[in-house]
Image (cartoon, rainbow, N blue to C red; front, side, top):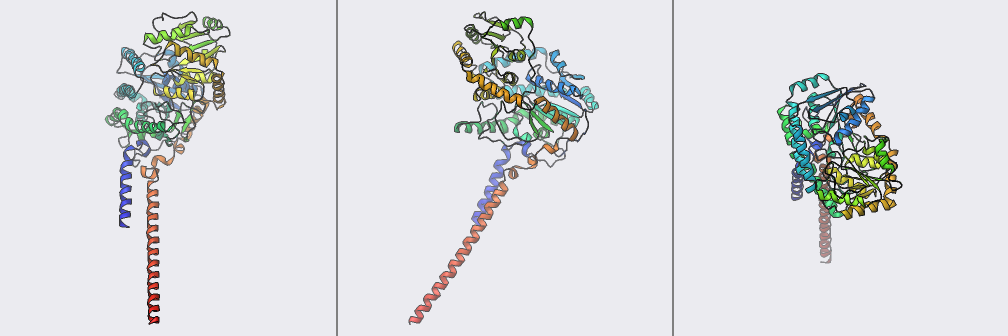
Length: 555
């Protein structure tokens, strides 16, 4: 018995030691400090005074999606202030926020630094694709910019004096979270995809179901083979337990240097969001467990297509019944830097009966066909919503995928850099809405064959039309986002957060309960064994007495 109890005690100790370092810190961080137990204020006032921010580098899908949310809030009468560094930005994008005030702080970078970084990202994306090294490089730039904000005493004082009711934060990296805690205001986290390397499931409390929920950067579907599930577990360990401490370390140092909630860990501070708005929905993503404090708002930036300008409309109408193909690699990488890949696309396009509108900024390809129109900027959403558009070729960014999905346009995707591009492409392929091409193995033939397959096989159009109908049938994402933001303004978000944040590893996985049941079973077995042994001993004595009695009687 003593040996069994000793083994149980050893198992409990080993499980505790093994479990502690690998659990999401926000999920099971020590919540006993005053900073960690601070409650989000219940404001109860509408309209609210709201602060939001621009992403470190100008442009990109991050700003576009939050701009759509900001303009909707302004239309509802809320006062919106926009914070950003003083790098040159698209004035049209800034005005789309409909902010009543824009507050700038001095960036540690220059416009030349931005151009160099974009060139570097393009070269890395083409050679090896995005990976942890590119994420860490972006993290360094973002943390440097964050430190510049917290050393700008005048801007911080102005933000303090504004007395905001709420901050809407981009959680790609946690500078906004630090600022919200510095200003002592509640915040709502917005993701421009479902999940980031620094934004994990644990922050809003739902479990990681690794058997059917693929991890980020994986490009798998919800129907995984055995080896994919093995890889999914390793992906989870990497992005949930190994990378976050590395990616967050510079921000943790900023937290320490500026004495922001010193008694609370940074992941715990991120987990205190009143609400999470995730750019995801059932038409594109896979079904998965969720929590009330996570609201899917996929397609929040979508809008109806507008009429094209006269010149572009004439080009589109000139395609007759063949229609047009729209080709764009997003707002960061306008085209491939490898001239051969560009020529391969140009040759493939020249063989098509369709007309092609190609967002392109560079030297004109030698093999450009008469059916292809090059443009430095295209009204992508308006083109995808045109009745003559037959196909969208893109890099797999969420905005472009959602626009094509919304308008019911099949896709061919060539993921390049951001981690969600491979995930988006996997979803498009698994749902039968298009094909994926490896950006490092593009030839004239495989581009032409992929286009021919998607355009000739009706299955792709049928599937994308089906999921487009699902997307359009769901409650409008922008309205959902506004409703929940106003709900948090009125009541706070504490009632949306599960008790999981107050549980430690032992409690969450019911390890204590399991070991207690093992202990009870062990005691029960010991007692049963003792009783059986006692009964056997009594029986043996009785039998022995009977034998003695018989022998004595015979004598």
